[in-house]
Length: 245
Image (cartoon, rainbow, N blue to C red; front, top):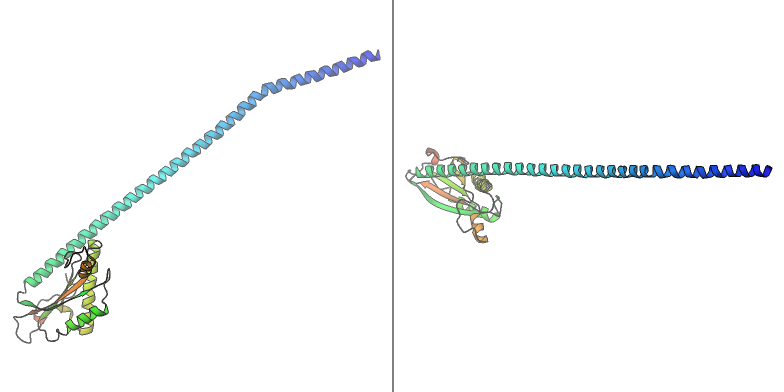
């Protein structure tokens, strides 16, 4: 009797064990697809987020590149406009200076050239060298006996660089000569007529190094009014001062 009862209990335990395993396997078989599906959704969400970030990064980079190109185009347009304006202003100034010089000299038919000298400058330089100062020293020896005279000082450049820059450079070269003669030899300001013609008028071809060197110059002409009697000075003549254009 006891043996039968023990067998009964063992069978019940075994049945419970089998039933428990069956339940676990069933639950596992039912939940596994759900977990797999959830994992797939998470992966797709992550992939979509990465794709959205990539699109956003590319769009941001594209916007920055387009803005940079637009800014560069705007700056280039502004620079071109300014350069055109500067060149136009410089050209107008040069025409005015040339017309003014022509009108002064044209109205003084009795002014004759008595002497002249040319000094040259280094590339992009406006300072006088020792040799060029010696040329001016020799030229200045004639000023002591000159009467009723003006000095026409014309600065020039080679063809390198913009027109506006060369107008300014040629003026600085002419001014260097005026300053030297005025400070060392006491030449009055009213006797100078200076003009910078830039690269407008060459004295030698700019296609060679020697030609360009000759064009980097200042020409000084001593003009005397031959109609005035002895002792008459240029104070009675409407000679312009330095820098008048």
